[in-house]
Structures are given as structure tokens and as C-alpha cells.
Length: 194
Image (tube, rainbow, N blue to C red; front, side):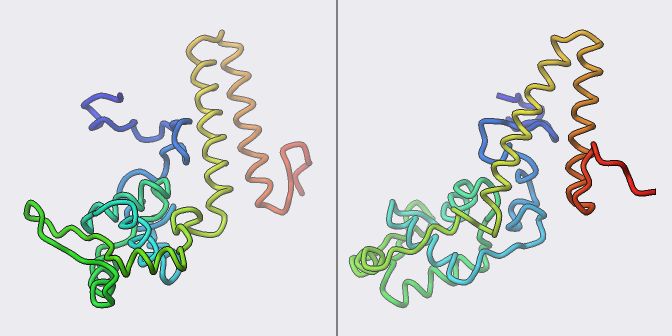
């Protein structure tokens, strides 16, 4: 969709309104470290265990597939680390809840009958649904930003120079208003303290 130059991905900075988080800034290396800032945000204790049990309840997977699917379902906000996934898989195997077997040179895991009963008796919460407090609001904000970007691109592409200038003024005003929220509730309309 975006061509070979970018490896099929959007160029940096372009939001995609079809993606849950606009595809930015959660694509790329920072997202793999587990949070929007890329600083290793952890999703609470038991999240990796819950993800493994839920995903293996759907179909057999290897560890890498579990990591990828958890990241995909969280919109890139949460990606469990291999250092957490593989020991948890081993622990679940020791408990008799999962079983691993070699298929095409990869270790693929499935839930055992006991594992299926365990999940059915006490289904874990989906850890990707709210990987950190406020994730839902952040997702909505990025969808709105993606839509705003799409509208701005259309004005720049199809509008007159006057419309482009007005669009830039509106975007700048919105940016200042958002920063004002953080600076004690001051909005773009409120006079600055002197």
C-alpha cells in the first residue's frame, strides 16, 4: 500500500485513520518495548500468562506468534518480551496447562485439556484491551488526530492558498489550546499571564 521504499509501511509521521491508534507513534522499535514512549511500560502481573492462555485457547502458536498477536491486538501499545513469554510458557507446561511440540523446527504450544478447563473456569481478562491506564482515551485521541490529518491533507491538496492558510491557523490554534490544557487550563482564547 505504501510501496517498497518504506517496506510497505507508512512514511514516518503519517497517521492512518483506519488503525486503532493511527499507526503512530506506536509503530517501530519503541512499540516493541511495551509502551507508547518505548520505555518498557509493563502491563501488570499476570498479563503475559493471561495472553498466553487466551491466545492458545484460540489456536496453537509458538512464542513469537504469541508476542506478535498480543502486540497486534493492543494496537502496538503492548508487546510482551521474550524474556517473559518463554519462562511463562515453561511454567504453564510444568503446571500441565500447555504442551509444546516441535513442528517444522519450531516449538508450538497448545492448551491441554486441563488448560482448557482452567481457562473456562476462570477466563482471564484480555491484557491487550487496556494495556495501561488511559489507553482507550489515547486510542480515541489518535484516531481523531488521524482524521484531522486526513482533512488537512485534503485541504492542502485541493484548497486555495487562502484555505490552506486558514487550515494552518486552525491547526495552530488547536495545538496551542491543547498545550494550554496542560498549562493550568489556559485555552487559546484566554489571555496569557504577563
